Image: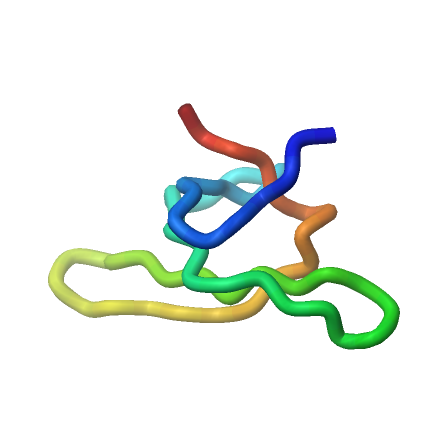
Length: 57
């Protein structure tokens, strides 16, 4: 499995916008990626379990 790290472009495996990983942290039971993306000119951000993300070339 490819390791997701800060600076990578990712997308949810189920689809959605391309996001940039800000950082990855371990919450004790799973790795969580803090991601940000833009919708028009508005910055969005959220955290996702790494297992739900795929790298975007």
